[in-house]
Image (cartoon, rainbow, N blue to C red; front, side, top):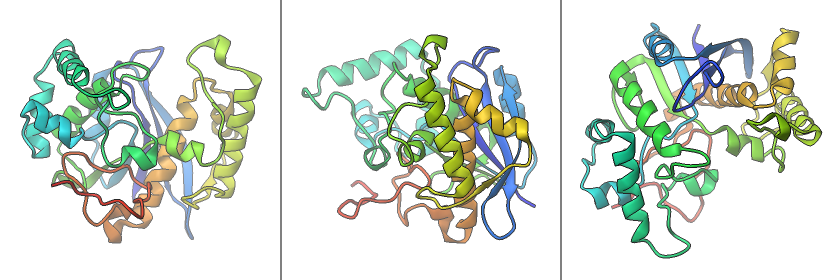
Length: 282
């Protein structure tokens, strides 16, 4: 039996803000069963998680790639492994300074370069470093996937029993509720956001969302955590778990990814390709 994971990532894990992982398995007849949660407050715990023997598939909430135009702008390699190695050798401040210099040359309204998948997903540019610090999430996450020998469909060959796919819980959440459902500050954890988390949880349990897979959970404490965790970390990793299950159900069709994706940029699993768009750049 395959194990499925949904991973809510952070570029600086700590006891206050750990990497949060939902563990599950495919439900007979379709869907996914949530079995447990794990929290990793340090890189060592997360790296040990990546090294777990398979078979397993994980959907990770951080960008796996960078905009191709940024890679070309900085003269970085255009194969994924070499690009990741190059960027991981930079300090955080060096990476940000390069991104700042690139942004200063771009016209108003187009300051942040995006990947092709970012448009339909509504995701942030991986060259952004505040609210949220997506660039550092790429730098910390992609380097560890590479070091762990993970298999990343369409981007990098690795251990076929340990498959990593990029997820974005915000895309799936916005397809269900329009309003905010989380806040890192206690003051921001309002009744309205609680109500939205309840709506999200109910929709996942019914399968009433674009991916169409129903979530099953027989543990009342886990179900409660999805709504009572005001930071949204618990719900986010469960949203990623649903994306992982959707991909697993399409494993014989490239995990549901587009037929061709830019191996420098990658693609967020489950996000449809725009009808007028293409998925490769030349």
